Length: 366
Ligand SMILES: Cc1ncc(COP(=O)(O)O)c(C=O)c1O
Image 1 (cartoon, protein in one colour):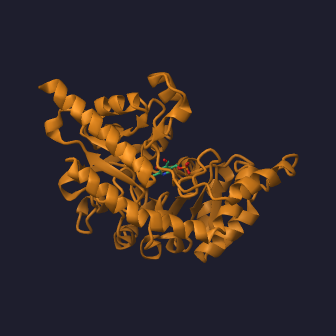
Image 2 (image 1 turned 45 degrees about the vertical axis):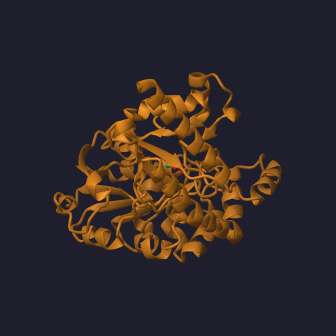
Image 3 (image 1 turned 60 degrees about the vertical axis):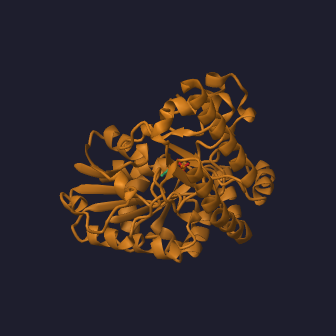
């Protein structure tokens, strides 16, 4: 079970499980941009050697300034964190909601953060028949959306890849609830300006948007994310955050990568061609593919194959290919896996390994 610590991308657990060294796996279980990290990261690493003897800027001013320019918002409307994961935890601790509503399947950390504060959870199951799309007419979210409640939504959502209609969120806010939108994968969406709520969050007392920099720039080891909200609404978070939570290397790298528009354009170009190609190839093999706006795909294993997600993960792992057992997301059963989208050659290796597992299973059944 590769998700022993709750997430994909755990190469140490894979080493233990499959007896290969970390560099002998192709990892489709975490969703990093295969074009990254951007070239400037190496220079930032060298520059870091000269400032390692200084404390990081506790207010992360340089990076906040760059982020504010990128999103055209006030710098005071941004708090930078040690990855989006820290900010999910912080916002829940700061708001102390009596009731938190989640729409499942979704990222595990939302529920974990709520459990840590002893808050009550309400889960709304999205339908696989509607490809896990949150419909504007779905009334369930509007129930219990009063002032003491919190609603957390992912857009694009992990693991489904579905975007949330910003209109939906604006309507929710009229009910008085706090709304946190996790836009960890929004940089991968070319129509970001149409779907992101960053600018609204900077002006609305009850809306917060969380962004991650680790996926798009492929720097998960660095830990970098930010939250956008009205400056006044962010004060409780700042009070709770550990001082110097964002180290100086992360700050430096963040400033460096943000300016690399060539990298960003190349990434969007790659995804625009690779996602439909991989989707079509997987469909030819019999997988149901949930349409995704992000750099990963949620797949349903063909039923007739008789392989569960955990069995397929095990067989693929033996071949050196790591995939995510998506049945570990609340709201999904054992027929779902999630795979990252990578470069063409690696995607070919994924397809080849899946094909081998499928042939071995049907050969075994005969
Ligand atoms: C939806 C979502 N939000 C947040 C995070 C955390 O990202 P970070 O690496 O910035 O902590 C992840 C990581 O997988 C994620 O999938």
